[in-house]
Length: 103
Image (tube, rainbow, N blue to C red; front, side, top):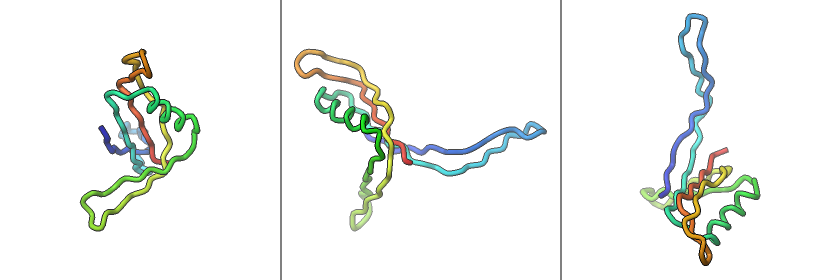
């Protein structure tokens, strides 16, 4: 499953009267890739990519545009959540969630 969400970057606080005020600085994208099952080798490729701790370029295709258009985002990868499902052979993992956050 692939989802695109938004993260609001803001500062908020209360005034002397108790009123809540919020200063929205910007909104950034969060891309989430979820795998119900993935083999160890494929997961290791993703972990190796995370271990680089580098800025990655991520392309998102706009399917409804003609001609086809791509949006490019610079992102950082979060720690990969996962659970061991099967340990024989190459192994199988479940609940793998990869989050890419726009810089």
